[in-house]
Image 1 (tube, one colour):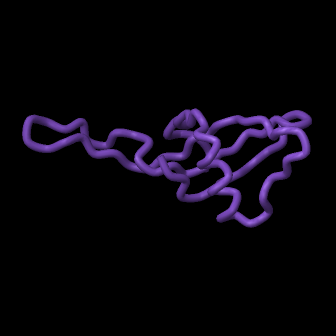
Image 2 (cartoon, one colour):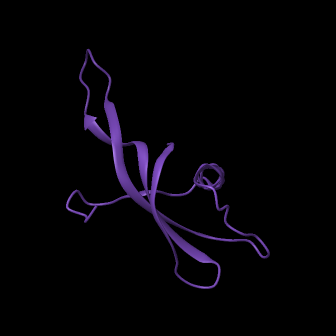
Length: 84
């Protein structure tokens, strides 16, 4: 899954962060059938992570996206009625 946009990133504790982002291919929009494969679409998701000692978050959004994608986070889809 690729990050399309970062909506927010929040420091929860010392080195613990929560990020909300628009994630490509994160929800099934068509289950597929015998002829057509399933189709997936983007959705807002959240994930949390720890920074390693001495590590800092990139300030540039594209660098931050690359950094988060390297972490291979466990993205959880937010409900459709989440306040975007």
